[in-house]
Amino acid sequence: MKYDEASSALSPLPDVLSHGLVAVSTFGLLSFFCSTSLFIYLTWRLISWNRNSEVKVPTNQFLFLIYNLLLADIQQALAFLLNITALRNNAILIDTPTCFAQGWFVSTGDLASSVFISTIAVHTFFGVVKNYRLPTRTFYCVVAADWVFVYLMAAIGPIMHGRDFYVRAGAWCWINDAYSVERLWLHYFWIFICLGSTIVIYAFIFLWMRRKSRFGQISNNAAHGATPLMVLYPLIYTICTAPLAAGRIASLAGTDVSLGYFCMAGTLIACNGWLDVLLYASTRADIVFAELPGEETGLETFAFMGKGHNLGTTTTIQAGGSKSRGRLGRSLDGESMIHLQEMGRIGVKGEVTVVRTDAIRPERGRREKNISTSEVGADTGMPWDTPSVKSFESR
Image (cartoon, rainbow, N blue to C red; front, top):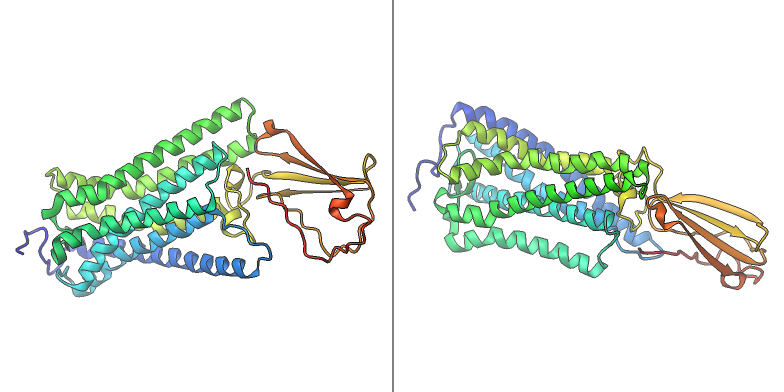
């Protein structure tokens, strides 16, 4: 196939690319290093949790979405990291494995990053506003469907057009200018859908929290800690993604977009990886770096570096019937877990009352459960060094 000037090999590189691709490659390398490091860390933690946990509990859904977002960011960062090859050769060469690989990773990385950021937004909406979590099997099916969609969109073009599909597209290798329809419907249409839906969802959550806080239906600490983040998430995503998407759409409309603009836009989108790591690891640290993350994914998990709020639930255990023999209280960020072990023999007669107060949604009031001593083994001679009991309450 004979390529036009915008799609043919370019040698030597003009000054604008010699300098501009340095920034694109540098931030691509930074994103690749950060995303890969956190991805490896979470892989190790997920494996160790699964092996060492006595009671098998589902993986925190938000953590698993971050895990998949990191995999998307690795592919996106790798695409822009490959510009190092162009700098080393002082040329953008086509019909090479490197050019095809770069085009492929741009397609899969950009789209997968957008899809999973949008999925995280939808998941946050249901967790915060609806207080709902998908069943585990359904959740994993949604994640699998996201990946199938991403790779299907990326594979259609090469299947239809072969190696001619990925050639030079201005400043780096991507979809051939001759296939502008495929650029739109296999890539940028879906990115704009994800971009718009993410902005709308976080805007709705932000307004919902402000309204609930005004009427005292959620904690002021929770609202003040989480509302700035509801602006930050879509803002960073939009700043990183929109310039390149807008430039490509302008090119489709016949506007002459300079190589300098593409270098600037490429630098921004190459920052997606390290910014995602910084953003989610700092604002959802209670999930990402937890010793054993529970299943909670709602409002109480939002905080900068895991600090600055008094969220979660308070569980009080009161024993001894009408006259209290002892009391134990603690705050939990995830599911309510009562873990009593290695305490010898219990000698409490009467009833044990568990009182649980929700700090996020005070309108729920207090929840109480009376457990007779026969249920907990009081005065039954049952030692507390038997396997512990963990109580999980899903909402």
